[in-house]
Length: 164
Image (tube, rainbow, N blue to C red):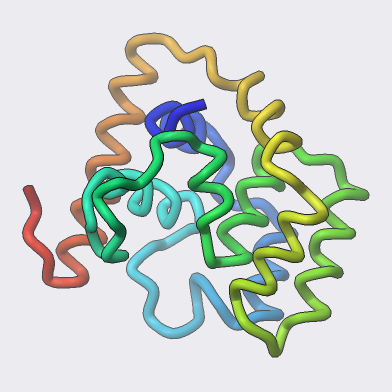
């Protein structure tokens, strides 16, 4: 799966899953904490992916890989990762194990939290479920691309970066 495919599938997912909100509250990260630019973890993903092929707001190298697996393994926001897994339909026992693994590290580094989550739910488990949802019509693809672009622009404006 490529980054553009991942963004399009994410657009189709429910932005308001229950367990990721609980994780946001536990970690005090995400909507309602600090002043995030995004209104949901879905929007967080779409803005992040929309700017993926440039340094963007996250100052990435221009040689960022185009495979979704690499993106999943680079994210450093446990609620963002957890939301993707939950919204994609990862089974509840795996979600519970991942939640507990992250919760044990609530006072730790975000990289460690994300690593704990990925050990419980590796990319392949989530990708399989996302691929089941990836057959989109041309109209859906166009709509998804518009939403990704709008999320990217929102992020860039919020951070005072040029909107290209």
